[in-house]
Image (cartoon, rainbow, N blue to C red; front, side, top):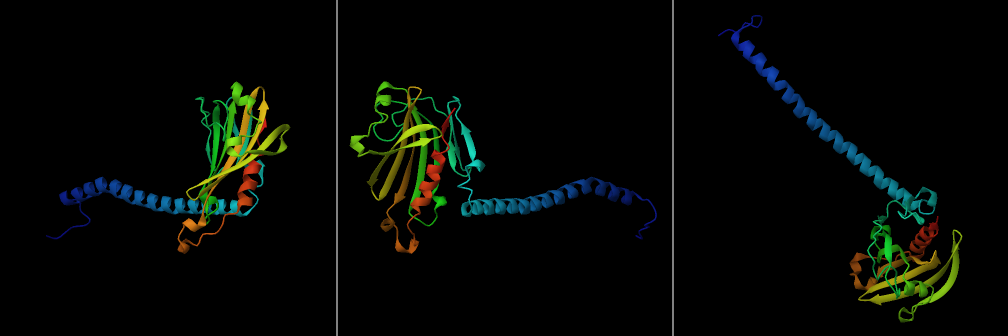
Length: 239
């Protein structure tokens, strides 16, 4: 059979109809593939940029410039605190009383409305495990009475006092160890409006000897961690 290209026939109509139906699906298929490829490339570039930004922040003065940090406003309106945005914050503002609202022997129950974690990745390839900073508060009579008293059982000592944004805090230092883990706590405490406030952090590290030599771990930069934590504490303020 000789095909007559310039003549409309029944099979040319069928072919045209088939193309009319199929072309949108073909276009959609390749459009979706293009979108996925473009999205992957763009997503890769964005992820790459985020990693570069975090790396740049870690190597510059981001952790020293508190003006660029995230500010957490306590929902009671009593206080605020700022912190680097790449640290993990739990600001659920729990209203459930707990006995561990501060380290040591608190004397009575209180609340722990804010907790911040500096992850291990902040000091990679070291024996640094993590650091936890928290804000605790209690209006319990015994807790307030023991607020500025060293906890004998934990070998605490009030090493100094410091003023943070107009408020005087007593500073307590103590440590604990066990099973190759070492915990160093610094607790800033004050009594404000009849309540005991504890703004404190614990640095958790591990014994390097517990790791195989092939891990090639080095000792973490304790001064660097403390500097960031003290700077975060330094942003705490009452309203």
